[in-house]
Length: 98
Image: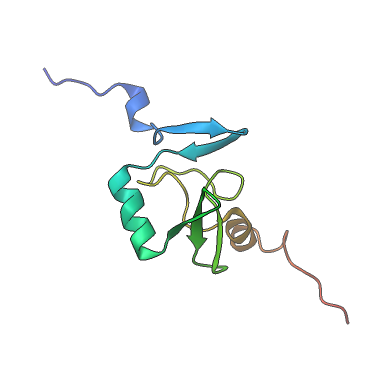
């Protein structure tokens, strides 16, 4: 007999907490230190922010600005605005004046 994996474990998200209504992943200390050293994470006024490689800006690291994902850090690498702009370009197209 082989032991079966419970269904819920395959879709488990990283551990996190709701802070002011937004999901914030709890990162392992080693991962956070690595990302801080590389410049992907920074602290601004005590708030952890993450670099968006598409718009080249830092945004607070919660689900208001980044989609939650099943990656090690618990968030998608692009900010929500960049992801939506790339995913649905017709919805977010800015019309230029003629």
